[in-house]
Length: 203
Image (cartoon, rainbow, N blue to C red; front, top):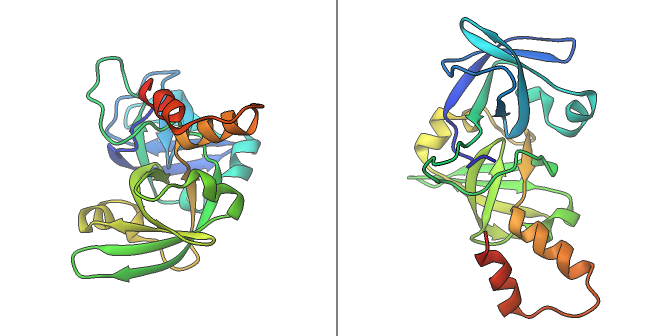
């Protein structure tokens, strides 16, 4: 499990034979779970200046691999007892979104992201979403896009500094929204909002 708070920007040293080798300050251990651009991966090798992870062909087909060329977002998995910040992130990419626009509004940036409409039920206004591993709040949901507000430090210190119209990003929708939608879809009786709130409160 992750929180969507980027701990470090790693440098891509090499990517070949499905193995991604990164230069990073994080001292990983063999077998550790670590999120790279929001994708949960396992450490397969440890080096003096970083570590390697392996991406299956299925993973490579599912994520926006063009963002794995120079720098990447790194977040180690949470440990028991860690301070919980951000929101609950699984490291499972649901879909690839496309940046539709980035507008400088003075003290922040409004970013519009387009996704397949089938994912919109899991994207909730004022709810949480993960973009390339970054925990963010959804400000507005439209027909086939949603709007994010990015503060200057996030714009400067993450891959958002490189994004432009047409850039593709990994999107993980809100876990609770997915679970509740699945339960409602597969039960024969209707569920009240009190029951939904009760399910949410258990996590």
